[in-house]
Length: 326
Image (cartoon, rainbow, N blue to C red):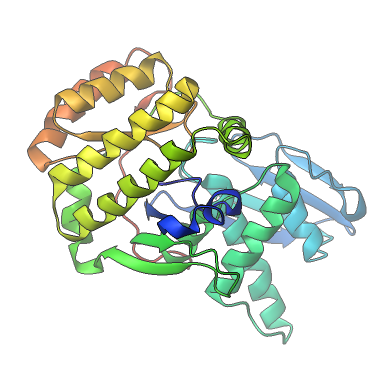
């Protein structure tokens, strides 16, 4: 909830409204393993991508695996084979690339620690992963995917825009002891087609810079604030209402965030008294729902039927991850 508000383009001019985002870390983990390789070369193997290898000083940052190459270049990691194993579908709008970046920065930090250097803190790992991603993405990047990967749990992140470090504040929404019960209120569907978040994000940014929809972004801030308050109060009905309101606002700005299947999932979710939102910036990837346990169980059957109409679409069996970076 509130995604995009973690981009400085938005949270600085909207700081008077106290922007925040809320995210839920799920247990579809991404693992990184480093092994020796040919001197001066970097090779990357990752599910859903063709293996790629380049000389350290010739790595392309505009490659589909450009973020991984950029991190390797930062650490001057020649002679390394980077293996990435992700439990989530590729480009599913679940923050997989940011999670991989966090894991890789952590892996290189551990290698440096064995060589006598001070290991990076969790906060510094998140900062470095986000900064490198923003430097090669070609569009402004948010921060909450890296924070969810590092810290885990269900949290609200406040973006005060005051130029101080840290420039975010974390508040736990659901305590760890309540996570097993809360995850029964959730449903997550992969729509069978990958997404390109930068396309929708770029449009939101262009609209905002042109002066368009500032009022709608103010409404999104209110929705996110009320959503966080509702979760902390265990008011599922109000949380669902805020989810559906935010989804409606974003569809007004960018109708392409949902395709036909996405629209069917959202419509059926609302009919079952659930809140439904696309993950990330939409345009493919995943749709998630929140509701009372009995309503979620009814929706599970309906969503299963809808998802059978497209190859590779399915419900993802997930729980909430409370650990974050290991």
